Image (cartoon, rainbow, N blue to C red):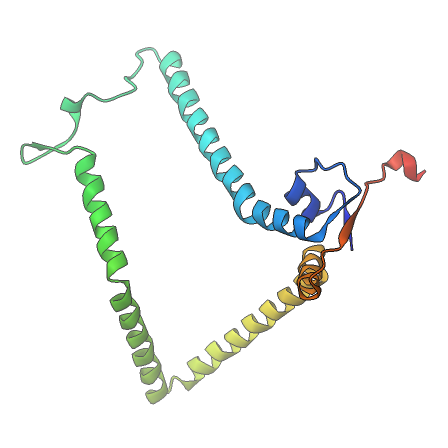
Length: 192
């Protein structure tokens, strides 16, 4: 198997920093999976968080220095809203929200069973009251969606990533990890 140095697998697995000509198929497969599902999403989340923090700080500093009478960055607790004479602190909003979320998670089996009951009741209603045309339209949409998904799977298995998965599965079956050759990028000057 050969992998391009400027290809998707190489860039995800090695960040473009590998200087070897060959590497084990198992090593590149696991580096690709870990990079694709853990490392790169983590970089995106942390990078987005850092950019958000920096932009908030820059906004606050810019607003503070550009206005004639600068606003306070924080609010004193006496200015927080009151409801019937009681202060509304942020924790009094966060804890009930967490409790509602917990109740939602714990009641998920009953919610899912009620959703299934609703769907079966709706299907029964449409079948009894001339909704067969609606069901045939839904069936046509489902068939089209299945065809699109099948087409995507075929394209995936023909790509470089699909080839990596196929080669890895056959290597695991044979219990041998062959080497993968990394094809270097040729510059335009070298082609001429």
